[in-house]
Length: 438
Image (cartoon, rainbow, N blue to C red; front, side):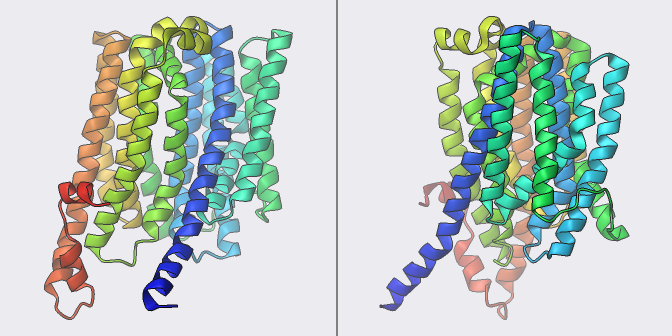
């Protein structure tokens, strides 16, 4: 075998696990989307648009809570490929502890506001957070079978709950209750089979605790600010506007499926490039963003062009309120994926303070902007505001990430003793050059 053929063989060997991991992530996201969408459709068909709004707020609380736990604990496990079994057991304990604390707050909010959705979610949140942790770690470390089993069981349980609710005409809350209970039970069982005792604990030194809190806070006020802003929107515009936005996002389910699958792999993919020069890391992140956003944009476009008869079949009476919002929210979804890549770059570079400062600014703008939009405009105007804010987020995150790496790249290029200096100079390119590269 020639040297060139040997190199090609090794390159294929390195790429194959990543391709299998990406396929597994897509399948896991497909199963997850099937269960989530089935519950969403059950609520949309059996409840009013305001009922859909209450469900959307509860689901947003779930996304916010599990996202903060993932930022504080799970991403740290993925960013350290050499983490041992003891460290992973400790991480699971931290997930359960955070789930208990967040769940208590959500359940209390449900009791105060009279929302059965929030109350049920609060009770199930520790198990749901553990479920998400085990799933993401399994995918990120190249062990997708456990994640696939989890999602298959949860999807079957969700579909069974929807079917039973339809036959018994039990109302929109019953399928959501089954979804919560099944997810929590499967999460605990999956953790036990993986050797992770589902008991709360922390066991983290003060510096690492502060860093975890910084990343959780950063998620809360940046990507989590979308959920916070949704709650503010419900206050200023009412549950009906939130319900229309939620119904439109149900129709964008296929695009969300692909975006969620890619999102599970971004941190691990950028973390694998951490040993490269700054210029190569920046170029690699841009390539990841372009490769991810292209297919997501095509799928989102297909969802936006769905015919009326299909929309009515999927959403029932909610279609008339959701129809004009779908194309605008499709743009917002793709922009969110692009911003997520640059945010993951900050995570891999361990710049919690920088990310927190930028996230605080963007989060405040997002919450204030949507709250004001709810006062001044209807649902379509609010959706347009959401898309515009998503575009601003893309520009801010990528501007920060580029400035973060370019000074380091320049320093590396200026040091003749650095063996990567020549490679850094050769690989520095503009965004337009990256777009033209294969």
